[in-house]
Image 1 (cartoon, rainbow, N blue to C red):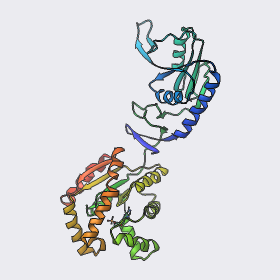
Image 2: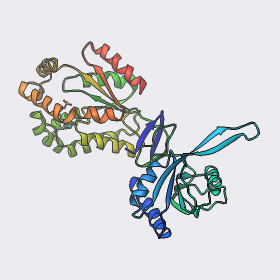
Image 3: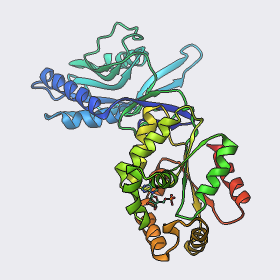
Image 4: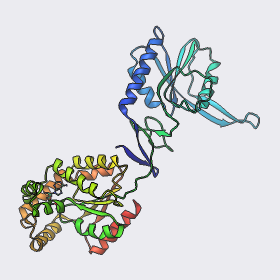
Length: 371
Ligand code: AMP
């Protein structure tokens, strides 16, 4: 995912895993060259450096030892003020080559503290390696021996770096971005759950555009377009139209309405690859899926509803119980997995889809208002 939300702040991908791996490789190459015949002590500065240390020492093919320290500050006496102390450094480092591993160096204040603490320890040499370095804000005279990636003075998170505790586990680096402008809702549920009916209510209430892939296919069938002819054979039997066809059609529908406040996607995505395509497509525009709302209705009630609808609408796929069952089968095997896809992202919301139309609209609105 290239846009993520942490503590209601949005971040977008800035430096990829691959770029980070290349930078670590090149640091390891230089360190290896400089440490021939030595057994360096790699000292990671917690918390942020843990990812770098794990990756870097795994790529270092010679003997070394690994330690972690944490720079803790505690309040001293009124005359000494705040005192910094390294916690966790218990071993004897006399005569050793120590390489400090930092995730990021910006002003250099922390680095200076670390330097001062190590300088009393009679090391053979002290070297500094940092994955990220902000040359524009660095204001110390200290030498930094190994730099992975110089970056401008931006706030970054991921790969060990956090935003108020979150984001350390991200494999790539992210930077701040403006919040998305659109509200994009995926309305989810098995055939007959009432997605179309509710989308009609919600689009007016929230001034959103309703895109039903089923409706777009049906209008193509009525107009006998090439797309319609292709889709009809799948639809009449209750099978899904192939992903590529559906995804391209959906993108075209969104692009026709690029000024919309947001969209209600009804009947899309229906497969994991459609969900991924939607994420990528929206993220190219700086937008995201705000949430997926699932209408939950027991299957037996759905069959009754669909057969009733078939009598009025004449939809072929609504008139035959075996075709309806096949659509449920498609839903259960290909579409229901999307619950997990969105749940992992914290974007899944279930709503009871049994009740009057108005009651259900109220339930859905309560969810949309929080998004
Ligand atoms: P619906 O009106 O949403 O019940 O869709 C009717 C039929 O259109 C489905 O049974 C599929 O054959 C086709 N269809 C609609 N949306 C999609 C989609 N996202 N992916 C594949 N097929 C779809």
